Image (cartoon, rainbow, N blue to C red; front, side, top):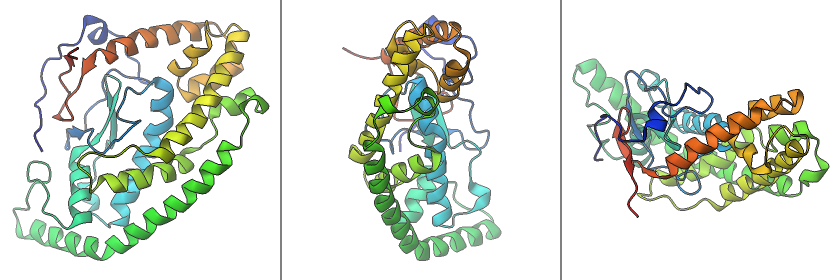
Length: 289
């Protein structure tokens, strides 16, 4: 797995000088022990620019799904990262060290030594052997867990596809039709398939679920525009879920200003290209035409 070393970004000044925005950061703080990150497991549509609305919807469920893979395989607690999911210049990435450990233990391969440091001491070697042994017998449990998620997400998708956004109140639209647990079940099978795929295929179920979310989001945008909270319905995708809830309750016009600033930032992100794998903060380059 070739990894790019961190360096000084070549992004426009607008990005490096952007004010701190913890809800939708330009770059995410690094895990102090496991700083490598990868975008490899994320197929369409998660491999594209994540708007603030999408980032706030999938960040926690994505971490939850990764933890489910880790725990189902019974991997070592002392090797778990503190930061599982990150966003850099609008692109979502996952912890590369954790992903490589899950991938290797799920397949029975030897992990990349550049990401999973080979055990040196006798105690560490024994711990690794025990982890390999546990993972070997846990692969059936992993297959069963993924199969259960496949069944459940099919039921969830049919349920939300029956929703009519116009019939929901503004609070329901702001929260979205799928909670964290539901989105975890929708995400988990695609992540599990990515363990054995060098290039993940598009996940049609995830895409269908996000389309339902999009319908609710646009309905909310229409209502907030009518109330003069936003300047246009499309601005709503530049607000996170908690911000959308507050916008519904407060009705203040400053949300339009925040959305406009975020939109300008996202338009700059689109012009940048990020490596698939990297250590530390990625070094974005201008995309070639």
